[in-house]
Image 1 (cartoon, one colour):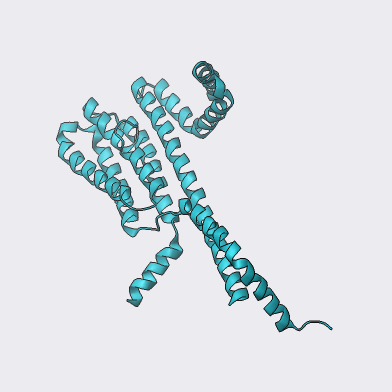
Image 2 (cartoon, one colour; image 1 turned 45 degrees about the horizontal axis):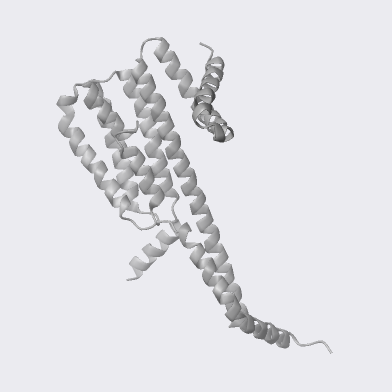
Length: 167
Length: 107
């Protein structure tokens, strides 16, 4: 006689219950090994700040055909803003990639955003052709940071928004 | 100047220089150099023309080349981050499937 469907179901359930104690450590191991894959969720503040840094930074770079001393205060204020976002990204959990990207852009010994202002300071004034080419490089670098932030988990973002609107 | 000729010259020169210090990693170095030059070809062409025309100084040219190297570092970080995000999504799907299956069968 063929066993009934509910009997088969109960058998599967029994087998599963018997195997569960053996499966649990494996599941725990799986969860632990996945911990390194955790990435900070999409952050509206980081996204907005990255866009703001890009727009303001490129605008200020455009002034580098003028003497640095005339723009020193603007550069100082801008670099302070840049330091703030780097510090913000540094202290966000599971955010190693974004933080590393910001570090490259904000390192004055590298030739991107902060490096451009260092060169302007050292040279006093830069040529328009050089400024235009450097702006393309810096723009591309900040686009990568913005794109990466935009690619972060939107599902979690939606969950957070749902949670906030429900409470 | 023919850009293809310049790229070949640069590749040979870089391999020679890097080969002296990183002989053990010659294969990896070659791949890195090729990737750098391929991705930078259009810019190298433009910057070289501007240098020839005297619109960029040698120092400007060098600064831009280093900026391109830094941009490639940033791009590598971006790619690594995107792969990590994709693996994270995959992990979430695996967890969801395990939980759903276990819940269906056990409970």
